[in-house]
Image (cartoon, rainbow, N blue to C red; front, top):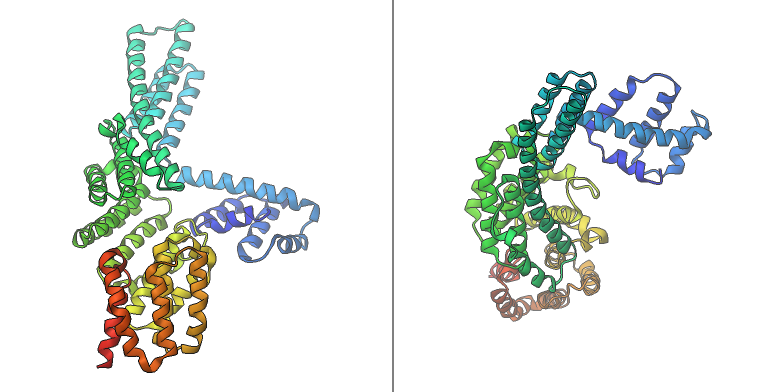
Length: 494
């Protein structure tokens, strides 16, 4: 197992586990009992190592069978998941493959008419869904069938063959067109993985490529084109165009229900990104309208998903961004129960960065509503988890540290705070996030802790420093404004 099978089983959702157990229950005999027993042991022991699992297994079965049972369990799990995909909601690829297998069987038995009928169904399905690679493969197979029919002395119209070859060549052009856009998309994604300032020149060059200037005809390819362009604009800090590109994709999706049905997860993720892009350019009201429209579509979208849980992460992300930037703290706090199942490190829905940002958003909402203990509950889950914290951006780490320390200050944890300020300062230095603002923030808190009688004097002294900083760096005030906090403190003294 070496933890891989262990992790894989714990990544399965409830529906997949239930399907596996139902599938496994149909198999009788000792062999079936062994691998289902091993599955139950792994599923019921979340934090136990393999040696302990093996020890439990060997109490019931021969130790010599452990390795083979483990391998058999993996095989059966994959077999079950493949079967589940086919029976729950087959993909276009699976449907086309099934039709072509039918055609092959009819072809073997010389049922030419039935063979052609299955091929035409596969061809139509691939064409309607614009799966050009599938269509190309279907036409290739169709030509080979025609050749076999001709070689076996049966009638075969050469004009039909010529038309098929023309369609094949046209499909190949479409496939190459799609491929060229996808190549650009893959290159962009690779550069975003290791983004540096030097990559800016490369991004600018990508924008000049002919394929990036003229969107291809295929709707799905246009989506890839616009998403790619949006990503590029994002990292070129051209935020207005970044938002406009996402709007083009959003409009395309609204025009075609086929796209929503064939790529529900893609649609959801794009809408979530579109909401975020609107927030970036301060179009909060429009973001709220898009979010409302998306929420109304959820019941219909769920029908086209194997795992209905897939609908929630993008929605929750869009809600989090909108509520945070519109200062709707009550709504943010209301999200706490909804997001709780997803806030587990390693879950398939949220990456570590997203988990940390959601903890921050809810913590910030509690902070702004003066519920400091509840705010610390979320902050502690990230601030004391180096793995999570190190996946955050510099800006978010700074926000985490400041809200965390301010909560302790508001709770009058003075002795603890004196120690914690030095610790957080050291950590900020190690993580290279010790910004101008953060360093002055540490100095201010130190003065407030060490000279409580001069609290007002200290606040007045540091107020202009933060005012000058936040005026020059307006984005820093989106989440936490130290200026506003100082003014609140001063007002409470009057």
